[in-house]
Length: 331
Image 1 (cartoon, rainbow, N blue to C red):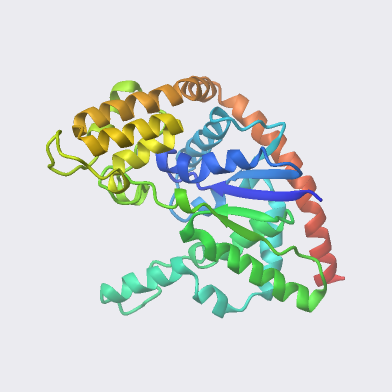
Image 2 (cartoon, helix red, strand yellow):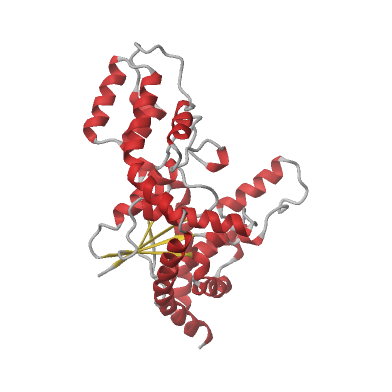
């Protein structure tokens, strides 16, 4: 039996090394699984919560799609599409909204965080600045997932709640209307859960500590040189397992290269040398993807054609689920 694997990325910023290691890489590896069908999407509707500039939205969406393809996504094997190009998702969202209690949305992490921020800032209205797009974010995510009878959703540890909510929505719906929606399962890659950024915290656009994937060499080297380290001397032994630099090096190197670097840490190596070798290993890995990415960005119609083809495939699949839901609700 074929398993459906689905994941997406919000076009809220230029893709960075953390995106690659935490999402792109594991998702691309899943394409190799036997008896699977992969749906990978650009979550531009979700991104409307933070981006209201249509030109910026389109450019970031193209960059995200180009990144998928440059890193190895084969549009003939996996379905790549833009969320807004599949209206069945939005229609499904409108239907399941009538089956979801408000209490479920009240428990969503993003909403609770917004409420807490307002509380800490002494705002009288705890819902100040909270748009319905943010409040209903998990419900739209559920529609993204449920539209394709998804079996597996690769997510980071901080995203597992979205799959849990999708599963809860499917369960509530099926209890009332019959066995129509499939229960999805999250797939969390623990080893890729936290990718360190320039300051040692999780690499995130919200922390402004990211290293974009496809930078010219000099800019990439400059950012790597900015990665925070301690003040130990070059000859001092160092613990590779607590080093941001080592974590990044390990992600792009072979097992033999990783072990060789580990031994250098234990014997003593200067941070400048580590950064130099990290830059070299990343540049070697990204040389071919960088070339493909630049060619696509300079020819955006190629990207649009791939997305249009993917949307056609995605719509065909989603229409089946939508029709079953529509019949269950409306007769």
